[in-house]
Length: 272
Image (cartoon, rainbow, N blue to C red; front, side, top):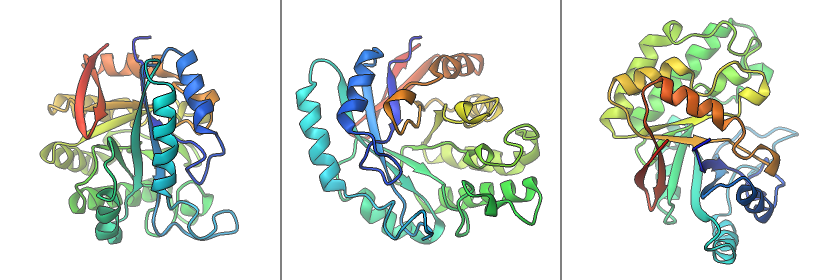
């Protein structure tokens, strides 16, 4: 495997992870990684439930940065550690997210959609009372609105996240079914010079394909897209760089010859 950079990682600074950052770094070194970018969650206005108390996904960026700098220095010369953010986008949060994104000098920002019209597809309630196609279409429409309204991110993360938690996962899912929305999303990302993330987390959750699906990646490349980061979305050391061999095979099949890393919000291209 020639991919040595994992650009989607969560530690205990994210509300849904208990993993110490140092253990994540040690695992990355053992796997031969040269670059690790932590992308801790910040999702304003995440729905409050018994499982998700108020503020669970609101990041203490100062504490996170302090920990990261300390460990970056400790492991200097062994691995490159970068300061990233996974920013949960919703159309009504444009200003709040813009302020947060500018509050620190991040190396890399993933724009993600976890919440669609007040619900997270992670929970079955998102799909209840309608067809999978109707639920997925609502989700993809919300992504289009987010891309129209918000600019301060580098790549869009797990573009078809909704499929990971659909009742049938990606068994009946195809690019063609939502092509009218996908084409508009990709064209807008390219117009704004934004990239895509290929995310391997769905494979371990029963999906047949990566996020986004191979056909989205193929169309992005055919339209001239080049910026592509690779992330495991690991929330614990065991899943770091998981299924990266699959990601590499898919990207090469789609015509990519490079993948992308970021430092100080600037892309650098690494050959497979």
